[in-house]
Length: 68
Image 1 (cartoon, one colour):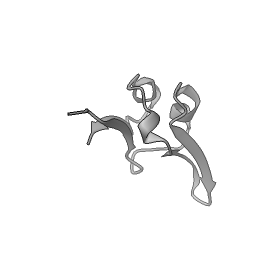
Image 2: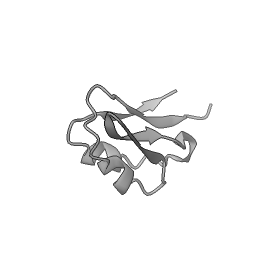
Image 3: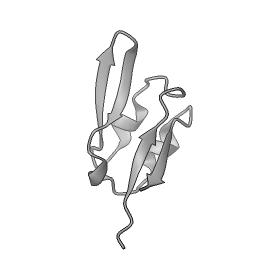
Image 4: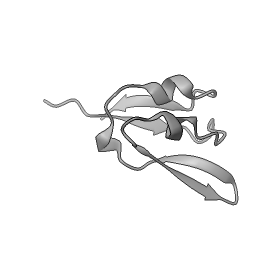
C-alpha cells in the first residue's frame, strides 16, 4: 500500500505570513489574498516531498503533515 501524505493548514491558527509558501521546494502552496488578508492554500498536495520545511518555519504551528 502506498503511503500518501500532504500538508494540512489550520486556518484558525494561520496568521497569513506565507512562510510556508516561500520555503516549499515542491511548490505545493498557492497564495491567496482576500478581504481577511493573505493565506496559503494547499494547491498541489500530490507534489509534496515530505520535507516538512513548511512545518518548521510556521511561527504559529498551523501546518502539519498528515496521512490519508
